[in-house]
Image 1 (tube, helix red, strand yellow):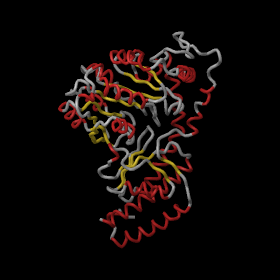
Image 2 (cartoon, one colour):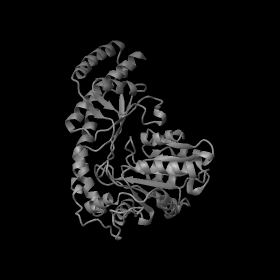
Image 3 (cartoon, one colour):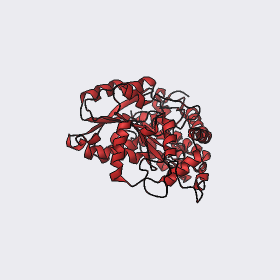
Image 4 (spheres, helix red, strand yellow):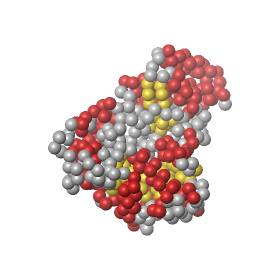
Length: 424
């Protein structure tokens, strides 16, 4: 079949009628299918069920002798600090292990910088209108943090190698009110791209106009390879080498490694930054959930245990991603109405429709019982200027349900595309 854009009005009208009839069948079926967020499936969560019983009544002390039932250990137990340090190729002095949410760590650091400044400098809120650069399409949760603190978000285009570094370098060096940039360097949300070595190096060499500028380096999906592990340069070491030792905060999480609601997370940075943050923690907490950290340490044992475990996740997720790629190619590949990414890891597929169609596609899917992340969510303030990007999250539904949802999605794409072309 030829591209929709090459069809006559008569052909498009006939096709539209055919698609409407097919779609009405889906609507009448009363399905309830969910692809809104990238959450682990029940099968993935079950991989860690032994963690619920891996501590005995006598096993409650960490390697440094601290009683994990009690207060203390503000920056985490040694075993988990070592596992995270090995995963990130850092030293334990550069790692702070916390509770189950890396998002909470990011929120907390932005909040402190707004109220007390970076390392006790002038608070951001007293300097004027704070701005963040936001590679887009990007992670909606990052944008929500900015919205909460009334931080102005400046979209930056993202390509196969990462953010447009010419734009990043120019803006960061010229505007002292740009205080940060959000980055998901490996399997970026939602595109799934991996920052190139050159992009990472250029980040480490930034020359910010603001001495309190920080890179928020979110390694949310860094351990989630579908095939072989793909490494990227160590941003903390590169920043040290290029005279910017304190410029980056690195975040990592086991939220999609163990239990999403009961995992462990870490923040990593220069030893100097970590020393400052540890002092701050004395005012903030009397200690994290060290028993949960100990459960994780006993279950995984070491960094090799984590990578072996991630192979099990990959075995579950690879068929789902393959189903997405195959269905999109078979149903939409010949019609010139869409493009999508084919990542080799992470949790999402980024889908671009014809301009002006994303909101309509999401609405049609909702009518047929398929819930998607709102169109525009992958851009600051929910504003996709071309109304074309949709984030597909294939991880949670069982394979059969995912297949049903994708079929409905593809019919919705075709129908929205014919409507758009006829309207034009």
